[in-house]
Length: 208
Image (cartoon, one colour):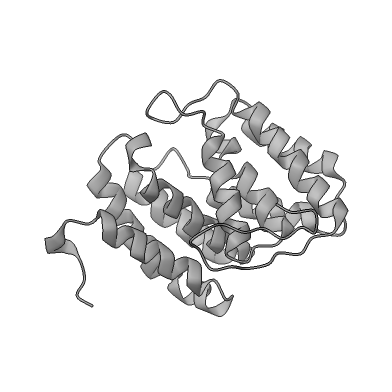
């Protein structure tokens, strides 16, 4: 991130996200909250610190046109689900940022929409979360796409049934297509589709 607030990622569409200094400060504080919440946690490879994932998702969100609210939510998107006392951590953390207007509420709504309901089966969790994402502030759609994108690009750090996860990405692409197009997140949607093609066996890839 440059001093002007412009964020770039090599090899992706070059989108300039201009932020005021106070917005950059809020992003920095959200990153610190996430780092503390995920301290001692690792990705499935048991080597990569978990914080690497939300950091990359936040970078992708900025690259594909997300504003400071979406970037803050991206840093915190797994805290409720993965960290002890995560809901309290997010609520208190957002309160401490002293954001203007309804920004803290909008960010919280995105985070809770992205948080899976652990009482449901895996398939039900995804569909339930997608339903809530479609009702949440539009930035939740971008964060979900970028979350899946990072996981697809980092399959070596995932465990479980990877083919099932890849099929789930297809559901994400289908369900979020309209919202992504409506809110100009089409580049992110298309990039996830292309990342997914790389991971699919040849017989499952779509022609052209």
